Figure 1 (cartoon, helix red, strand yellow):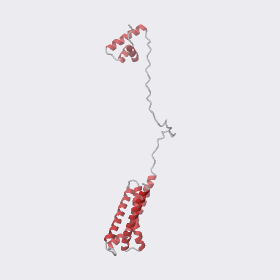
Figure 2 (cartoon, helix red, strand yellow):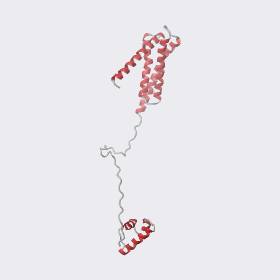
Figure 3 (spheres, rainbow, N blue to C red):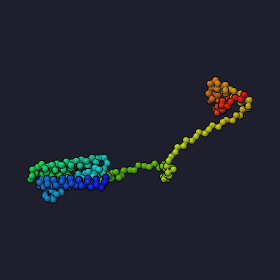
Figure 4 (cartoon, helix red, strand yellow):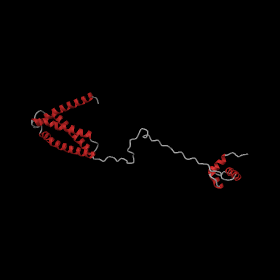
Length: 214
């Protein structure tokens, strides 16, 4: 919001309060209040509007904020009714019923404002004493560097299976190789062949991949 916007808002607000003050002060005087009492009475009505509005915009949603909303609309209703009565009622002293309402407003407003102040203070004190969320102690307290702040998940490669040495004699090895090829041709799996000949599956796989010497 620019300074021009702020000046416009504050200026219009002050003008509205001044017009409302004039009408309410005249109504209070016609209700039988003295000169200084008539001058203060509008401040009580419109001042309650300002105080309740401040509590509404400064507190989070809850019982205290809802109570402030109730006071705000109650004060707005009284102010509107007073301005309307100032215009609609004939000149001179007002009806005793209207004078009674005017006389009752100050003590009721004092009670409401006192209660509002207590409720607001308790709400703020409760919010200040709320426990802060616990921090996991497992997290390292040292500041993270730009490099360490970026976590990279590295997949560890599986260790390659080392080939089993052929400890059988050459002739026996040739027989086993032929047996491996024969079983493989019959549809046996490498693991089943390895169990059959007593060798590892890697040896069976390597023998099958080795071309037959002619």
